[in-house]
Length: 268
Picture (tube, rainbow, N blue to C red):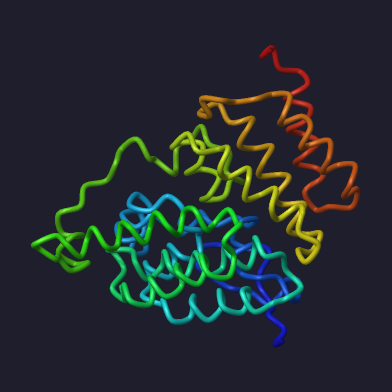
């Protein structure tokens, strides 16, 4: 198995080399900061892809934006082939490859590839969280094929209008929130994002530095004023867990500040 070095701090689209070995990219994307350059580089294509498919991880959306499906596919397959990871995580890797290739705003869209990976999820990981969602996406692809008019990604993008309810750069969102966390809060899907972050925490193949970031993101989501189900107590529990389990984390100063804010909040 080749060693993959991925950045723990992803700024914009740059991949640096100072990250933990063997970290699968789809989990690194769950736990890194990725907001800076999205406003200026092929933003519409990425946002359109995200609006169409809420399960896309950041790296999948970036790959669609930058027309790099083959490279994303290769890295997802690296995660799938890593037997040190749980079946749940390996299933997510295949599921993301399927979502990547079925997205209608992807210039490299390939429904046959998408169906291959989605069926692979069902065949190899039928009990996984990803299996039920993969089955729904297979039905969606078949429905699309029955439509009389098949538009290209560029034709769809030419008529796309942004959903103004999905303002990923709202000033009220904490600047440390990942794209996944922001989207979850704004689209009332925090419970689904929490499940993904908790998966990173529970998988023994995921390194500690990713687990720290997952806990931090969980706290930020439940502390976010835009979250219709904000939960001060949950945020406090996740922040305390981060501080106790990872006393030397680079996030401790920020976590302590957020914990102080939560403890001194007048919210119930």
